[in-house]
Length: 134
Image (cartoon, rainbow, N blue to C red; front, side, top):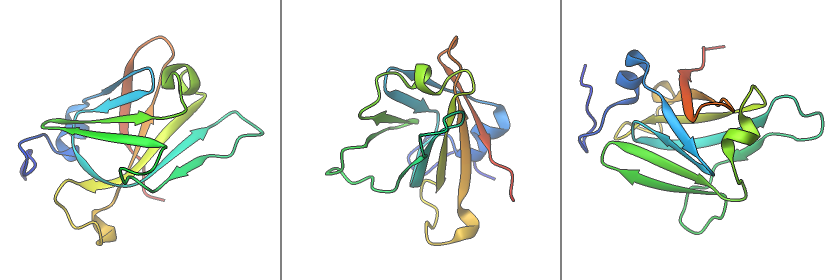
């Protein structure tokens, strides 16, 4: 199994196997891989009033999330959020990214991955785990 994508970056599978983490600063979360994004769910777990935000439009014209791809990582900037660490840290919420490896067939459901990003309010590192199959 290859651990590099067609662009020279590390695969999602290799990052998960190595326990690599992302990090957050302000409204940005950076992950150590590139991916084909399908959706992002922003969930506030302990809020009785807030419903999760489901983002599915990653085109340049939308105003919710800006995706910046670097050779070995991906940066996601969430517009309308000041600090993801404060908003989602200490078990207040998570990001769930549905994606597939960069270059894989986005139309094949078997290639889809659901990644849970967990934030802490005392550490900028972001834990990345594959969500267990239901």
